[in-house]
Image 1 (cartoon, helix red, strand yellow):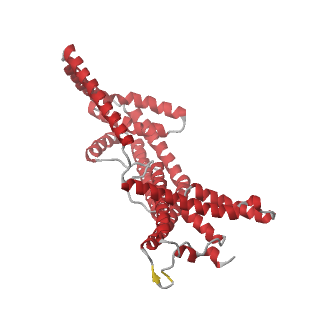
Image 2 (cartoon, helix red, strand yellow; image 1 turned 180 degrees about the horizontal axis):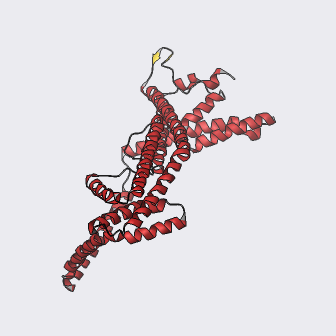
Image 3 (spheres, one colour; image 1 turned 60 degrees about the vertical axis):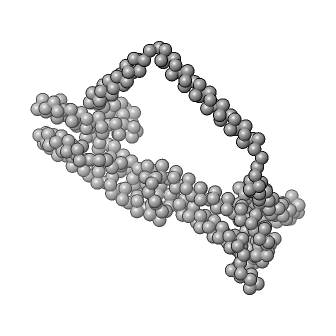
Length: 366
């Protein structure tokens, strides 16, 4: 295999002693940025695969243990909720604690029978929200009463005004659409369209040259036909995705062109190439964002955080420590409540204090 097949798609820093032109510098910049984005995309995919594997192996069992412990705690609290020694306010706090924990827990329970049993407990203790609901309903009722105070004539008048406003807005949008269709493109728009067409033509020309040399149907040797078939598949994929860089790399690989050929391209032709490369770079950047965003949503991580692939394992280790700590605390709570029934009042008091001080709970499910 010759060195030309390994030559990168890049214009040398100085071609025959001449400094690089503006389009040549832009061409090299696009090539570098595309390479970085491809490397970043590969890093994300590799890091996500490793994160997903370890999450399934270590985090999921810890999360299941958390679910079981909370369910066990809730059942114990439910059994103690009818204790006559509890004051009315304490029972209310206890019911709120039970219902609140079950609201977050029920959907995470895989067993249907267990889920149904926990739902019954939730329904028994979920009445604490009824007062707020009644108050909210009362406010809404008041608003409805205010609306009903208008006369039928006023109501119809407002309705007619709304309908007329909607008609006028719809007509305005239709007129704007018609005006857009009638408008002739300006010089700048025409120039942009011509540049896009020329860039597309440049990519098509490279594709035709590659297809002409690599078409496997014209090859009689079986081994060479197989090689060209594989290369032609890469050509078709690159052309379908408008990946100019890949097409140029294939031209270098089969020695259809040399690095000197790219360095000798005119500024006008390079401008066409740069337009396509800029689009390819933009698509790669969007792909990186989509991969990152999908990962963050999959594991419930904060989308506003700036994460790097190299930091994912550190994030997971911290997450595992949080769940382990939560499970340890739950076991301690259960053991203390079971060992001493009188500890329930202290638990309720601590729950009240936590509700006052707490601004947000840690989510153990991401």
